[in-house]
Image (cartoon, rainbow, N blue to C red; front, side):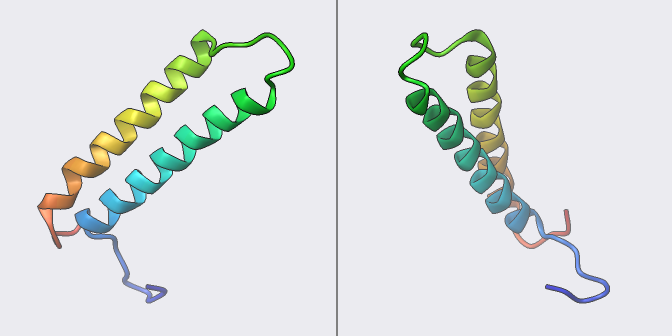
Length: 71
């Protein structure tokens, strides 16, 4: 992976995007739970961020079937 001419395949990129999307989604929800003492609820910025994290996961899922072609 640390070779001079390394490049991601579409499958690897898909898994990476899925992982990043899930981490972002869990992180946003965790921040909301930690700040439960203040004003509750998920605000508009958090909703947008959750939607973008979901789209990132969907994009990753769509890349996995493309296999070992270079990204």
